[in-house]
Image (cartoon, rainbow, N blue to C red):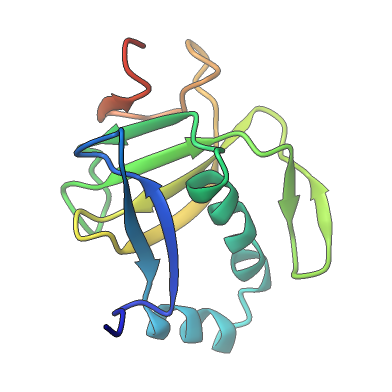
Length: 138
């Protein structure tokens, strides 16, 4: 069966955190980033993979509103490095977490670095959603 995405990852399923679900990126989004020269964004797909597939998810939030949607899931991790191009690796921005935004249908909408909250350094600043994973944390 042909997938609807050109790049896919297995991530913690927000509806059943004991399982995984497939999330992905549409070909047109990837092509647009290439055409517009978004080298750092393309290179950061390596971080997306770390967060989603390689045990890098520290927190998972649901119900976070973004400009394009009223509901998305946010995977939060703390990589110790960043990619500014496909070949240049740098230290992670200080005091920041890496976020991957996934729509309810599994489409990866965006990914970015965001400052940690002053109140809780394991939480990104401005989070308004419900903590779905890990369990028993506030």
